[in-house]
Every structure is written in structure tokens, then in C-alpha cells.
Length: 136
Image 1 (cartoon, rainbow, N blue to C red):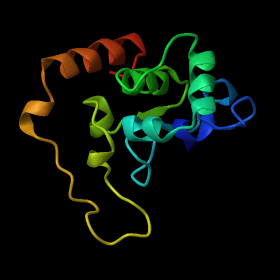
Image 2 (cartoon, rainbow, N blue to C red):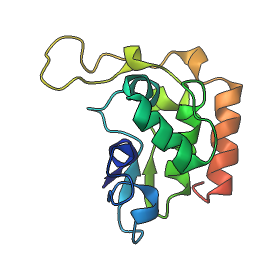
Image 3 (cartoon, rainbow, N blue to C red):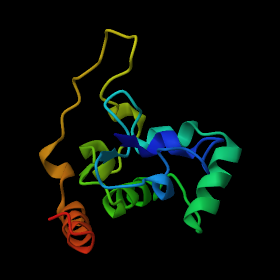
Image 4 (cartoon, rainbow, N blue to C red):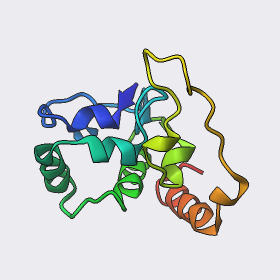
């Protein structure tokens, strides 16, 4: 199991979770787990230096508006046999849609997707990227 959010700290170069260190395909890759914040929530909580590392790693500007697309695409491009994307991250929701906060008892596991959130833009993004990265 590789969790991409875990790979973008100070140990980016050597982290087993960073994409360039994934040695074979015998694992599942996640952008985050049910215990992590959404990608946008995670990005908002990063220190300035961590955001600079993301920009350097991806080679282009990363913002709270595009980070979910960038990280989802990174997961799909992995050589992992399985790529798991969370619905909250596909539709670009912030930390208010977090599924679980470890160590708390209130408000966990209650988030539900609304019918209109899986709109045509999301469906097209999923279709295009699952075809490009042979995940269909």
C-alpha cells in the first residue's frame, strides 16, 4: 500500500510513498486513506515549504483549485495494480467532506455524495484518465 499524501513531506526524495520510488506493481496506490483529509483539505494544511516541494516535483504550479486533479492523475499513472481514488477527491471537495478523523467519535463516516456532484465534467475526467492510464 502506497499513500501519495505521505510522500510529499521533507523525505520526498526517499519516501516509499513517492511515485518515483514505487519499485513494482504489486501494491495498491491511494491518494489518501479514509483517515486522511481530502486532497484539498490536506493541501490547505501544508506548510509553505511543502507546497514548494509539490511545485518542484510536478514541474508546474499546484494550487487548491487543481491539486485534486494532479494527485488523482498521479495515482492513476502509477504502475500499481490497483489505484484507489476517493469520491470527495474526484469532485474536488475540501476538508468539510473528510470521511474520518482518528481519535474522534462525532461526525465520522457520515459523508455522502450528492447526486449532482458526479456531473458530466467529473465523468469525462474519469473516462479520459482511466483510458489514458489503462485503468478501464
